Length: 192
Image 1 (cartoon, rainbow, N blue to C red):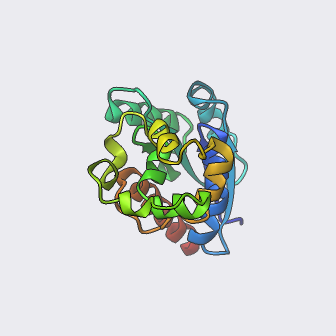
Image 2 (image 1 turned 90 degrees about the vertical axis):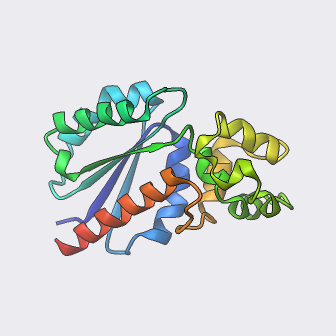
């Protein structure tokens, strides 16, 4: 029996970030698989069948999607949970929404951004109103590009920043919830 955590992701940037973050979170006995879709419509269209058809019956699934401009985060999450239920594996599935965008996680940890991208002076901005609780920013990716003077690039930047993200960071509720969900499934898998 493989102790496996499977991530269904909206896009490749989440995949490369998790590739560098997960080894710092997960016990070495837990395998992880990252499945990146071609955007939110592709994820929502195909996720039920991917979960349903997954061969490892003991696997746990975490669906990660950006809220983007969706006005109702609760309704969005409920819709994705319904898709997990339709797979017949809702008990071993978890949905996590990045409030607005994945870049919110990065803005909540400007020390990680500074270290990853070599942009000096970002840590000092963390206590500013914008970055104390960045889940509420309208366009985190735009903010991050401005803050890094265009050094942030979605794929390469996500990979590098994932290496430095503080696992116990609580400035982004959506990041904290993702990490807590990963740790919960890790505990379940280790008990199998």
